[in-house]
Image 1 (cartoon, one colour):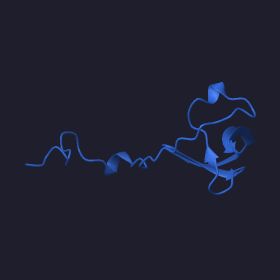
Image 2 (cartoon, rainbow, N blue to C red):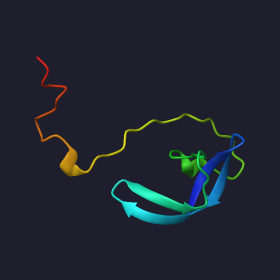
Image 3 (cartoon, rainbow, N blue to C red):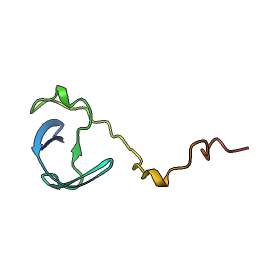
Length: 80
């Protein structure tokens, strides 16, 4: 398995070893260092050495279906 990482402002294809898989998440056992930036969009246009403009995406972790509010019980919409 391969991922694209940003190194010195350029794309680098990196081989990784996958670990545990759960819905919405995949553990990377080997191939990445803590803090490295992984490309998550536009990978079809990358080649080794392509200049990359970094845009940090901060996403909330997905919660298991059992932890989500029931349909029609959105707490934000329930405010008076």
